[in-house]
Length: 95
Figure 1 (tube, helix red, strand yellow):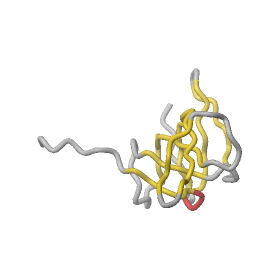
Figure 2 (cartoon, rainbow, N blue to C red):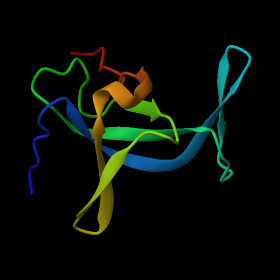
Figure 3 (cartoon, rainbow, N blue to C red):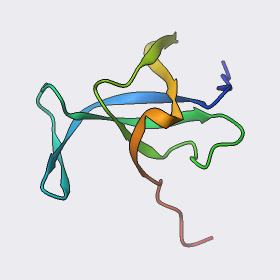
Figure 4 (cartoon, helix red, strand yellow):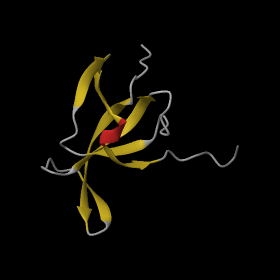
């Protein structure tokens, strides 16, 4: 099934990682803890988005999203404005 987000939404696949800020650094912490950012992979974006499929994004535990079951996994539809950081996917330099 191909889903196309509308109206500034993105579709992400959450990971189990939580990101904790220590000083000016973001540190990965796999423990289940409150008030730590969540990490996710972008699955689909709206047509005017500057983000790309495959980018890694980080969002607050307070970000509102809608769980969407697709196949065996649960994805999350959320507003792009709720993201707090992005790590673009690595480009293949051999092209």
